[in-house]
Length: 282
Ligand SMILES: Cc1cc2nc3c(=O)[nH]c(=O)nc-3n(C[C@H](O)[C@H](O)[C@H](O)COP(=O)(O)OP(=O)(O)OC[C@H]3O[C@@H](n4cnc5c(N)ncnc54)[C@H](O)[C@@H]3O)c2cc1C
Image 1: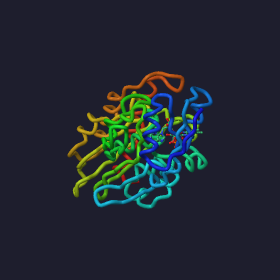
Image 2 (image 1 turned 60 degrees about the vertical axis):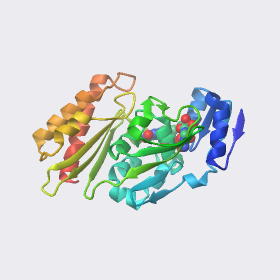
Image 3 (image 1 turned 120 degrees about the horizontal axis):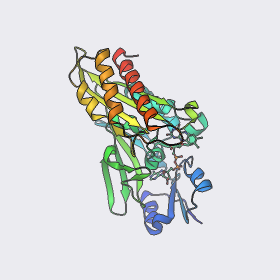
């Protein structure tokens, strides 16, 4: 196997372009090392850890920029993320163990494109965009269009994700991420539900965004339930209806972790809890 440790994004992308499908990029290695042990060995490994300019959390005027090499622990420890991007902080806080959080990067979580990836549903509710470079140049794409299927993204075989851009939620936005996993944080999510809700001055819903994890080929938004809540005053019957709607919109499969029916039931339950927590601001 050939090994490269480039010091520029351009060099990394040209190596990936040269080796195509036979190359793999490695960041924290928490997914890739497992894949290399149990699935396939690439012909070429491109370590991007010397691209230190990809490790940042930078508040700009219009959005928060997060570099691909930022670790999950760095997200968790960041005050701005904890206070303004609570839904993302919730996900970082519930992510595996401290050891994994110290190594795992947000770029790896996104590029891996697992429907169960912890940060993905929260980022969908924040309407984040992915910035990436391929041999054809640089692109900025809403995350919802970036994910193409399980493990498949707009990066293709030779793309490098450089970071994400996350618009600031409105003042007073309430973000909640809840995960159901059989063995707690160390286990893969059976179902995850993220909500980001803004209210107008009179407590009617200005905008509701609901993201679902592990119930479809990609993380997804429950658009029907979002529309149902739009402009209305939240109460328990409305929350119940939205939770049932989200369960209907989910597209789960049955696998060794859970049946599709069980996953729908968990979507309903977590959506109900997430909306209630956002409503009561707890
Ligand atoms: C014990 C354990 C517990 C875990 N728990 C969780 C959990 O609770 N929640 C969760 O979501 N995940 C979990 N994971 C999975 C993993 O930790 C995350 O997906 C992590 O964010 C991957 O990041 P990484 O930097 O380690 O990626 P890597 O393993 O280095 O890479 C992952 C994939 O992304 C590609 N890649 C990495 N960075 C880039 C980039 N910048 N541009 C393009 N492609 C890139 C790699 O080529 C590879 O295909 C767990 C893993 C382990 C081993």
